[in-house]
Length: 310
Image 1 (cartoon, rainbow, N blue to C red):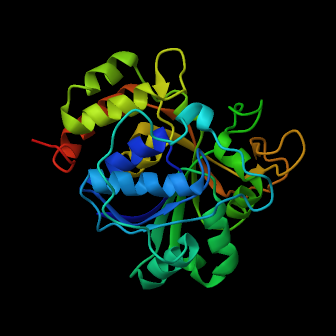
Image 2: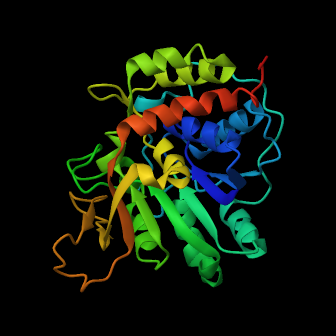
């Protein structure tokens, strides 16, 4: 099993990613942390607890994270994810609460007690992990790598150049990319290709209670592309389990923190300023058929865990 810390802002595609991570036998979630992003941190925390309850995985600790970016004003994406972040399905009553400690303190504790360096997966803005780097530099050696959903080398989804997670807190993203910790950047270059077709989403509805739940969330999802709906954050979990689905290239990536290009991730593709240094393994292509097939195969496994399963 791969032990991970999973930092999220659910959000519909986060919820789909978490549904797989909570039930896949190859992943061991040591800590779930929330952050403000798709909706407020109060709502993203509740959504994490909804999903751990739904899948009967309440032993997984949840910690509430940052309520706002490091410097800029917080603006959510409820126009995409709905007011709650996870609309369309009536979840069972939450049976647990978040930890009394904040996300950064909880991350530090898990890392300090880990027998070997751990992977941190982040599918929202990177505020929590930037604060972890700033406040606990002694634990940097305990982080094996970051697997990040975010960024783009080919254009943005909230501006002509910026992807939402980076744009939400570019100052935090800049800290993470300059940290020296290995990074896998899974951005719009692949997530806008990793579509679930509408036929697949409809078919999911009939694969047990987990499929029913996911179908209702995904049909409420306001993000769509010709050919289907992109499940951006699911790619982080898919990459952990199936890196062979992805084509990657090593680059030095800088983050623009202000001005009209704020949130842009700029790779030195021509080695003009990085002097051959790299700080990120950037996903640039994906086997889309393998991704969709893999996704469908996860749902029967989920049904073994969820509330209401027969």
